[in-house]
Length: 616
Image (tube, rainbow, N blue to C red; front, side):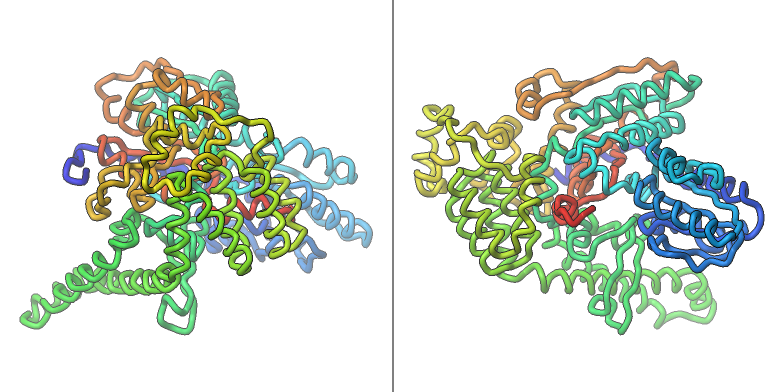
């Protein structure tokens, strides 16, 4: 509970070192091509690059013009071209076309290709096949980790989720292992590593290999424990509507690389504005983890406090006024500007989210999570599809229904799929195939009999909120892992008493008290038990690959006590802002500090858009 918060949480390490290392290495690579050069940057590297080295820094190191990689013929007249790209076949093919086009007209230039964060064998093979391996120099910019905030670090690899979990392409696993190795060498040695999921196990093994290859040195650890978790261990959480402030901003405005663009409706002017959202923004820092219903009260109180601070000027003499202007006014003005932005954003979100449709949707979500009134939920989803409301939202509800019921009854599956294809187009047949392959939207197989019915029928008959008995039986048509996990770990708090969002009592507050995210609950349980002992049934239902390793390190145990309470959680496949808020809450409760490392920040729309087959 809020009043029992432990105040002795340890200080976080300084992750700005990661930025400095990345910037220094990039400068070194650029200087290896002396003289003026034009730099071509892949679109999804532009925002991360901007956080590391701005245009002025690049110009200082003789970068003349900057271009975005657009896969068409280039207009650069420079004699030296530098390409900063992700290791993608399509982009390498385009570079080959650029070089061969120059050769065809007898134009001589120097070319350098910098792969970020690493080059793959397939890319070099293509350069060889196209006959230009001797004309270009290749290099790697080992820019694995971008600190987005004091406790959030991103690999900025949104494609990791689709590549690994859908395509079975494991090329990024070594990248995750290298990122872990970098953190270990700067902030380790780690004394305990826990993990769950096949990808986590492989990333851990890749990291251990790199540790064996490198030299060991004993140093004072800044981070004691590490927890690796695959995104497919918990697919329900990223599909839930986010209702904490930061998550809601991400769902509606899309936070990109820690930065959000607020439109004219928020800025109360005729132009958009880009805002960096991190702990430096004092207003945002105080509301980011709050449930949205609490935000307006806080912002209005803040506005009153600000007005009081401004009003102090009235009774001042000249000396006091001079001190006020030089010391306080600038800070007050900045706070005032940020406050008006967040009030504008809140109003804009309020208009969208207080509509009846959104309230109905939340009610449906909560019913799905609790396993009640499933027929009514299906009717709501059908209506949503038939009204041709948001395509992605309809898909999200279908996936939530399937995940929480552990598959749809064959007649429901066929009916809902047919309605979806009629509403949104038959080209989504491929999307359904992808969702099925990943286990997000599946049909229950015939022959799956009612399980554990005897023990549950009595409860269902007596439960007023269970709805029709037929629904109760249909939800029992197979053993539902989500339901069983939910009961075993108490993920859905009992709804008999009112949940006070002003004083949250557990991590469920991030979903209005309806559901504790499975990913965060697993982390809490493993830290409490110091391993997976007692959670065997849970790991069996999740499909295992769990591990817990205690490393030996020679640093002083007294110095380690603070490090032991800093836990690095690595999400492979993305994590949501809601999960980060839940871990911050858990940290306050237990006296831990969590550092979240993720392949990318995700949400329901990003997860589902990566399943669409116009993606590639």
